[in-house]
Amino acid sequence: MAFQGEIYIKDGKIKELSEKVGFVKIIQNQNEAVFDNAFAFPGFKDHHGHIVGFGRSLSLINFSDCSSAEECCEMAVNSNKAFNEWIIGYGWNQEKWAETDLPRKEIIDKYFPDNPVYFVRVDGHSAWVNSKALELAGISSNPKNPEGGEILLDESGYPTGILIDNAMELVNSLIPKLSDNHIKTFIQIAVDQLIAYGITEVDDMDVDPNFIPLFKDLDSSNQLKIKVNSFVKAQNDEYLKNKITPKQFKNFNIKGIKFYSDGALGSYGAAMIKPYSDNKRSSGLLLISYEDLLEKSKKGIDLGFSIATHSIGDLANRLVIDVYSKLFEIFQNENIELRIEHAQIIHPEDLKKIGFLSDKGHRIIASVQPIHCISDANMARKRLGRRTRNSYLWKSLMEKGAKLIFGSDFPIESPDPLLGIDALINRIPFSETKSWLERETIDLLDALNGYQSDLFRNNYSSKQLNKNLPADITILDKNLFELNSKNIKSAKVVATFVNGNRVFLNPDYALEK
Ligand SMILES: [Zn+2]
Image 1 (cartoon, rainbow, N blue to C red):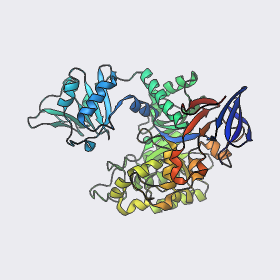
Image 2 (cartoon, rainbow, N blue to C red):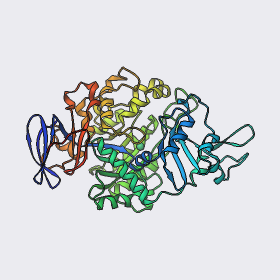
Image 3 (cartoon, rainbow, N blue to C red):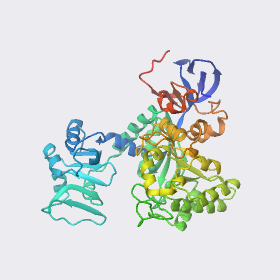
Image 4 (cartoon, helix red, strand yellow):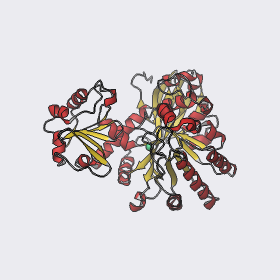
């Protein structure tokens, strides 16, 4: 199924294909590039990521591998990454250190007596800062806690250097604003990583309206190497206030708007029909009402946007499915695109509703991040109890006629599509050996299909490359269809092409001319 042979490219499109065995040859403007023993696939599309956030996380000091507070500080000193005097890092987790108490400001003070320092914990819900940062924020002994936040104090009433939730803002708000050039750099750093994973297109979620002109700039000067479809923030009408409307540029496309119906499972924010199994007093929280989501979506659809709504818990999914059912009824004959982002826990009654809609020709799109399933399995079992059987439904959603599209939610998880494909076909949680709810696994072809853009899904009947489509091609060193399903992750990306331009070449792979 994977393609070997000669691929002729003209004006960014595939003009001719000629099957041969043993190599992939790309022929374009009298240039030839030969990739021996390699296989060409339609380019991977990640349907849910955060490009600026990814670039930012790659640019900050990352403490995720540190095993002590001192090691974090040493890493910060060696990194030489000051931002206007500020030293900013993220990813520390004292649970992984020998000393599991929360770290204190005095440790950072030894390394950074003069620069303000702001280190965010791995979950993003607390920050570890030094005396200089506290001084700039005017936080001294016995401070008043802001609403929804806490400044941790020692026995004598002095801040320890740990700020929780809304208290983080006291320091965070002092960090100089990022310039447009910083943001553009983040975009390019992120894109350079994505192409190395064979990704040729991304649906970029929760885009700040202020980033739109920056993407446009990069695109118009041919510096946007992959295709980016923006889904702009809409919960508080951000896109309307900034007068943003759908528009396709070269590689950049203003495609959709993004809502939230609830929070996350890890922090008990996902809205559930019944209380959490490990916290009977909580069942999460809906972040939008049926009426609001309906009205706001209608407005967006009238303007020509696709609609994407974050939805994790079964109550949130119920609300979104009901709103989408109504929208399909209102916009009967129009071609509208309604996506549920994550779609993690769906009550059997609501799964049925998805089936009824499909029977009427209205396909709900489930935008799923398979890696969340295998990385959160343990936590999900605790939170959900017997309801785990309704969680991360892939096969069931397909059987009900939903259209499944896949992504990673980078930077929360790795953008590597092969990790996602491995999760979809094997469903083996990290640090476990057996498949979890194996009946929900899907086969390789369906998995690959969900990692392709619509254009390819609808035209690549055999999942091969096809004539007259954009030359968005990912070349791998192995044929995924010939690998044992457990070895999918062993394949390596050799090269990535977007509109016929080679945007990535694996330095380990000798290119024959
Ligand atoms: Zn996300």
